[in-house]
Length: 334
Image 1 (cartoon, rainbow, N blue to C red):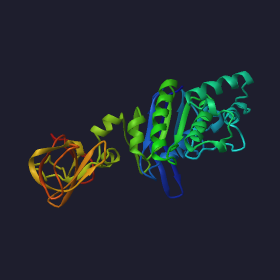
Image 2 (cartoon, helix red, strand yellow):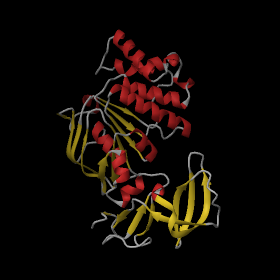
Image 3 (cartoon, helix red, strand yellow):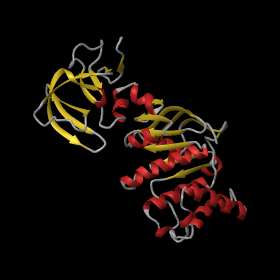
């Protein structure tokens, strides 16, 4: 596969800056997720790497070769989109074979059959090879769409929210499948999403984008535990991090305006008294919705908690995160 190096990438559309001074190294064999809300620059970054957009400035290097001015076909990469992009009149086998018959690849028939057999086995769609695309379920169609990328054996796989149009169960199933496929192949994946669960469960590295800029890059655990800004802290975590006045539980570091508390980092049984607003039983977890001095607080509690609405519970922070008025991280020793 290949290491991807982006150096000072910039792209504007009229007065709108879509990507600004973006530099990033995607390690060979990594599963990198670009995370951010709509308008953060995720898809534009993907399109710049793919060659579907030309950068106003900066360079794109794939596998040690600069490809900034090359066409998409010359970059040896494959894209998977949100929509399935299948030929409805073709069978699954014909859809998988189609990229291999292009003038750029022109694989011999025996090579085409070998790759189809390998990919259909990996994706567990071998029993569907003779079905037309229109006879498949949504999850099967997306697997075939992914298969069309896999058969090409490219240097890099680019995926633009490929699971967002599927229902919750299929998304969960295909998250596991995609991670398994990437791991088995040792392939380099660059995946765009606004879904933090996809980012946390699949990525080896996460790049958080904000207004076209890369604001933090690291492992999911590092970014979750050590966000460099309030913006990054709010991108990961379900339920979302609690954002409260810095001095709500006592003294705070110099310059801190707010304290960020993950729900699992709120200790119950001592500290300040908070009132229970609601107990939310969700099967895999139980959320406690509280109010403290008029500020809403969400924490996690025992599935068999006796607490009910109107009760009082004492809470105190554990592993708090502090941020200044601009949202930058403030360390405890500051």
